Length: 324
Image 1 (cartoon, helix red, strand yellow):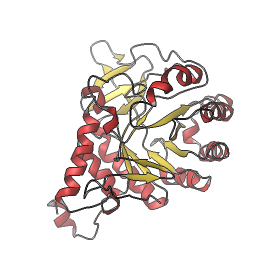
Image 2 (tube, rainbow, N blue to C red; image 1 turned 60 degrees about the vertical axis):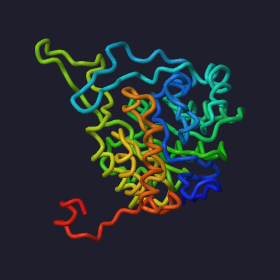
Image 3 (tube, rainbow, N blue to C red; image 1 turned 180 degrees about the horizontal axis):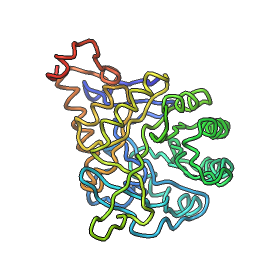
């Protein structure tokens, strides 16, 4: 399970340690929403984040899907970027050296269309320093299985986890899709095969259209739905996973404020990721980290261990409804 450490310089420590990686605070950027972590130096001090999770890196460069590939919705956004990225060689040669200097831990998100490709990308990354760990995007089409997503096949998720665990001693987190019947079963498969953590959740499948033209808003018709609207559903998925496994959870989904993040930590996530909110305010993650610290100070909490998983389910329904 997660370990926590006190800071010598402050009575409150927001640090969280998973495997051998200590994050200064629980706030990470969500893959695909913060570029390679190098694009916004004039807007945010990246060193004040717990970690940067890179956009998905594949074996070869990917141009992504044709436009339109992003559309705003009433309480979120649809995207179908198509995992556009520079490829692992360019990432390691041109992006990683600069990322090492940002002052936050670096988590490389890996995407692939076969188990062999996942292994190749990870093995290339293993040749380089400055990487704290990996987040594995299993919401990718399996070219050997008719284009179905790895993430909706529990045995495939287990296979990927097992093969990658053989190849690294670094932190290994598997990012789970919510578009399955029982996300808890997928988390169990990851835990059984040696994952250090699971990230919950990737985007929901969504769709929107223009009524007058009767055309979809994004070219792929459906896409990943994220933003404030999914927070209650994401929170429920984290709660389901918390009851199913003992390994740490990285909570994701609709987090825009410190209060949002605290909900995930209280339910049982050890870390959280901020995603769609960064399109509105690139510094949102830093504000959320400060808000978490302020909450802990107000409630007399010395370490994140007192906060994580502190949900009180003992109250009567009438009191719960009243906000108790």
